[in-house]
Image 1 (cartoon, rainbow, N blue to C red):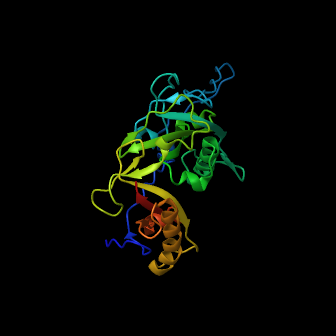
Image 2: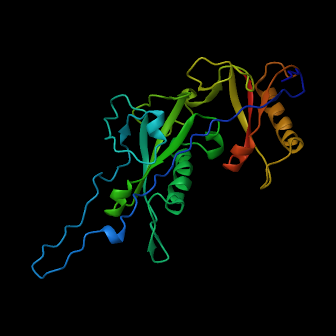
Image 3: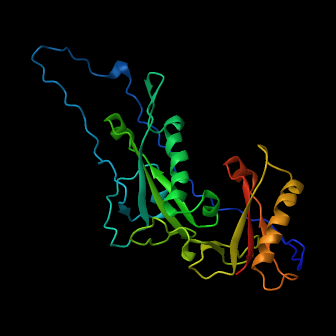
Length: 279
């Protein structure tokens, strides 16, 4: 990486952290029909009771103590905790899964069933925080979601739960305030780095932690295909330069880094880059 001061760009490449939840589990295998025991119905046979879900339907406003590993799991049966106690997640929305499709029932862990929470939770997270989706790109806040277990879904559960978490540092979730609604502009949630992006010492952290660089802007990148380097530079360089100049005390000498998405991130839906400046 080469550092160029003044009006020239400081090129930089680093992997963006993408917390992705909504992973699925495989449904249990169906027993072989030939090995299943047979029975003959009689008029005095006691009817089988309809099973009920083991886990109660979650409620908006509940708080949870989650680790990063449990936050990205597809299901959780951890009970909520008091929001007055230390917690790392808050349920900000509870929706209903679409499990019926063209006269057939979808498996709760199928991609088609998981599509609704995957689209709804990230969109509603920004609204919950009181910021725009573009502004949320520059925070360490993320939406994660959970759905019922396969057994509970078969028993009639059809909810999905959207939780807000904040990544304080790699593998560490931040302790949240009692309520997170409207807190998107809190400096503690902002995205910072421990060193210059693109260097080995760089780690993405929340700005409440010790840091040396800060994310200040994002730049949308056009087209359905992964853009060439020249196209990305043409979009990001002037935008990052302008954002860095605006924050600098000296309009003739300032630095910035352009963090561009990788092909993997582009395929996952990240169609923007991030501009960084020294903190």
